Image 1 (cartoon, rainbow, N blue to C red):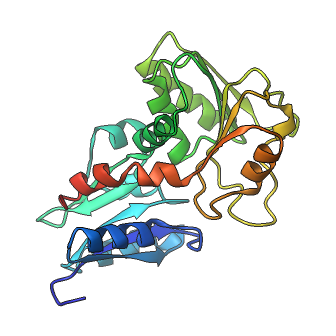
Image 2 (cartoon, rainbow, N blue to C red):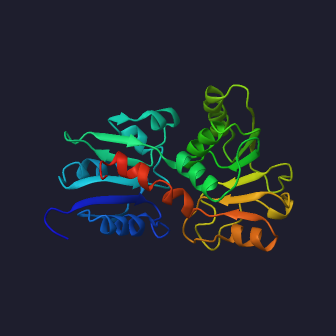
Length: 265
């Protein structure tokens, strides 16, 4: 690193699961970009103070944002790009020349691109998503643009799930969408794609978000967690003969989108 090196961050709490610093620092090196990405472990109570401090670091250019800060940081941005404004969720931020904070969200586009890139189909599929947080909102909205057949949102907070339905209906008013509170015995055999968009799976002692044995043998089980690369949910799904989709593809598919947003290439 030199005095001219640009610094980017990966903001999370907990932090041990993130892979973005490794991925992006490697890309910077491959493309001969004088930059580095570092992990930044901040709890939600200190988020505002940290952002204000980072604004003062002139060679700190921006960050990727993950659990649990995606919705909170949207409120701290001076400007939100279209997808971030619609979802009120941010997973990338940058500072402009006046050190104003600009937010964007590529989770949904990244998930869809990664899923299609693994030769799975989305159009006309029945989809179930667990979670209604920042990533879930972005993914669900992007899926609605792909002409899925139906969507079931399962979340502990029923009100948040209902708020997500309202957003989806703006995108496709004819899409059949339902929301329900989380239970331990959901019957999921009618769904072609089942997505874990919660934080369950980050830690060894986490309970499973759902019972894979209650899914169709033809279903695809997807997880957005990147570390561990193969969560307990995906291990069980593979052992039961289900097709699985790994979390790493969501971030890998955001590389070009993020690079363009950050004015890196």
